[in-house]
Length: 302
Ligand code: CO
Image (cartoon, rainbow, N blue to C red):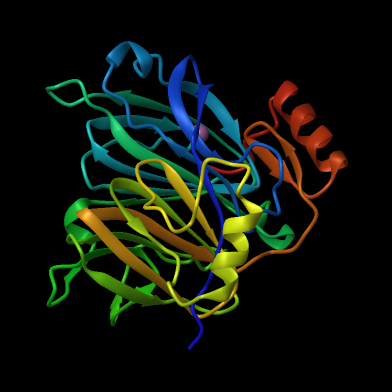
């Protein structure tokens, strides 16, 4: 077994999306190969209704999948296939935009005004970019939660983990999407398929993902000396942890414990042409999509 060294630690950056939603973006600014097959990760945890109420009114998607995970508050959604519904605390929606979908996502806070959740974009390979659009709405109670002897909790949203399978299926990137909580002071190691690109996103508490005996870790510490991060320090809220290759990820939880998403997927390794909510392989396909939008041909199914 080889532990995946930490390749980079960064903080999610403030961004404004939709009709004026203040959120934090962990990645998805410039380099689409950074965590291939994943393109973007937004943390829309917010305590101020003014900052999220404008929501994400009707907009198109083509060529990708979007995965929304709600922790508190609700998101009302509707789409061009005629689906409508509400995602609540603990629910997940996996949307395969494929050939094209129009939808809206309108966040509403809970009684204390909190709206907490995440949205991840996964790329589709060229062979599936124009596939039939599809929705998978998963209720919180359908998501298996495993509790280990030391109190570690793992919600298995997608993929197989410790013998349990997450409820989302048929996803092109064949990802693994886990929500992991580790109690204070505990040290855990998680197996991850060697060929997957892997990241963690911390959203509660703090911890250390570097292996104390890892010589690569010392190297990285020098590389990032100019930045505010030192991989020997504890990483906390809104930190994106990118891992290098290996077949396990190791975590040392800090004094308050740590909760993070651990997400991995098989890289697609194809050219990416990205225009807002539309992600294709070539510039020509983007022009086609914009043409389709202007000529009312964007929605091809449903
Ligand atoms: Co959308």
